Image 1 (cartoon, helix red, strand yellow):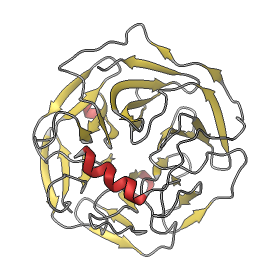
Image 2 (cartoon, rainbow, N blue to C red; image 1 turned 60 degrees about the vertical axis):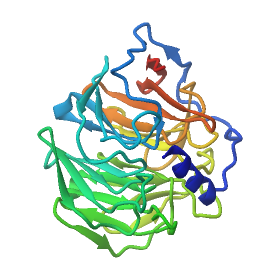
Image 3 (cartoon, rainbow, N blue to C red; image 1 turned 180 degrees about the vertical axis):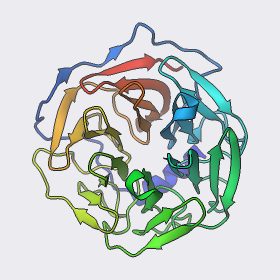
Amino acid sequence: MMARTFALAAALLVVSCASAGTTPSTTTTATATTSASARSTAGTIPSKRAGAALVYVPSAGGVVLVGGDQDDETGKPAKLHAWDGKQWRVIDAGRPEARSLAGVAFDADRSALVVYGGSTGVSRDPKDTWEWTAGAWTQRAQAGPSATSHMGTVFEAARHRVLLFGGNDDRPVLFGETWSWDGTTWTKLVADGPGPLVHHAMTYDAARNRVVLFGGSQGGGTTDATWEWDGVRWTRMPSTSPGPSARTGARMAYDAARKVVILYGGDGRDDTWSWNGQAWSRIDARGPGLRAHHAMAYDPSRSRIVVFGGYDGRKNFNDTWEFDGASWSQVEAGN
């Protein structure tokens, strides 16, 4: 599955592997640390992977890892792993089948972990929609948006729906469509926006009720554009200097304690940035190193952003890192 997914990505993307060349706007100065409690607990931590998703699920007691290009689980039922700040544990080993780069979000209104599509590495990519609630999987729909993978997906709390933008199918054709999921039906929203896009970063800013989107590939090159969705329309935000360089495979999460969006990494990148709704600021904090297609989410119970795994251009990882707003710490060494 890994070879198929990243061969597809390579066909779509024109990516520079050089580090960002902007001059930092320093808000904090810190170095990455390896926590004294960082450890390798073989058999409980997830396998090395990229293209997974990470979301906070209150009933699981932390963030939950979904799918990815898994080194040792391809073709087997997908496992859900939960991280509580101390250890990983398997919380479900059932359906749906293993997949990567799916649309994943947690619907807090219905306490449902939503998974749409994804790349399975077998025949055509599915357009199925699954939900995990009360410890059990249920297939909710067999058809969905035009794109089947490489999309951005978030839960819009103010509008009580899951929002999906962009992505591609398995031909591959890129899409610039905006869709919503209400727990029963996918609806295509009529809205102009960033245009056909894949491998972008997307998250929901709860304080401002905005979906924030950054970067991605338009098929022939990468972009450094920042867009916001207000529930009705997409707006391209004015460029700021400094700002993150054009990239794909970056990930973002909204830090509710500090009320900023945090962006980390991307293909050939190892930098950390914050977005406050008006401008980007670079955070001078050494993180996990070159990392793209990693899983990233905010854990509100501990006010930490969690990063798991990812790809550095040569190999996948299964280490776990946390960001406290000022510095990164490796809290699980992986193997």
